Image (tube, rainbow, N blue to C red; front, side, top):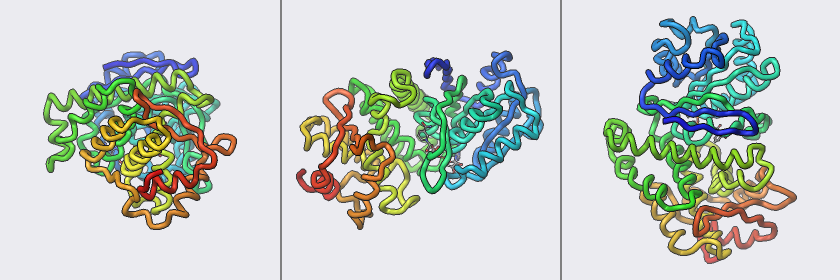
Length: 381
Ligand SMILES: NC(=O)c1ccc[n+]([C@@H]2O[C@H](COP(=O)([O-])OP(=O)(O)OC[C@H]3O[C@@H](n4cnc5c(N)ncnc54)[C@H](O)[C@@H]3O)[C@@H](O)[C@H]2O)c1
């Protein structure tokens, strides 16, 4: 399946494929665009996937990965999303002799694709870039739309650029090794995008994947069933389509449109930091945040009861915690501090995304601390 977008004047072509083998033909199809020396960036958990893609000849001939020009294997996880590792990418590219026509190829989750894209954006004032996301979150969210970056001074994505990838390939097969915790993060983002859609069809479609997701032999229950695998592929494609169209309208996040993608994240990030980073999976926090966005929307009259119940019911059926107060939240004060330090604050006001009858809307809130307190404590606001 193939989708195309234009992000701030840059064309971004996205292929959603079943097999790792499909990548070879796509990368080698346009020798002109991706014909330069290639630097492969992955982490210790995705090196095996990168090796399999390399063995298929996707990076130039039937060679081992180490002979592709440059190879940079980084440690895994958010703690590796730092300047030291960006510098390592840049140094490997230089040592491999990449020029501005060199191609940086990121194979991994959002951490790898964000850092690889950042490195490409600053290497000799901008090298070529291709991304191969290998997590569900990377496919439905991180790799699409052009935001790059790494963490600095303890602040997530403090440094970054907008540098859309002209080529993104999503191989469904790579998800077979993804740990369940990472699937939970990806599904929460998928549900988030489904809530943003103008009709309930997408939400219902994601809902139909919940039995396979809850099955003890997941992910085999989904990936080895041809019908469910196709459904998952269609949901990823719809999510990419929705995010892509939103970003096309607001590529630099100058207006309010792109903010819609933060549904559940303002509450979710505050929960993640106040219970301690790493305690909850990102998706668990986002899912709880979507439930709180429903509560806030209801309190402000923007979200109808039926819609709020449908959304929270679906989150429940996927096994996410939706109750308020969150069982792990012991200190409301730390939650409120984290909430009001959100870096997406504009002119002192916090932007909350709340579900509406169709899709979602943005509400800027100033002095409603009392109301928010009621909502996270599960009281009537
Ligand atoms: N640029 C954007 O618009 C955007 C949007 C959302 C999130 N992000 C960023 O994405 C990051 C989160 O991405 P993520 O959830 O993919 O995390 P991640 O990249 O840390 O990957 C999660 C874990 O899964 C492992 N992994 C990846 N693919 C695997 C596979 N196929 N099999 C087995 N293990 C695999 C990784 O090594 C890691 O340990 C955050 O840093 C966030 O800031 C960026």
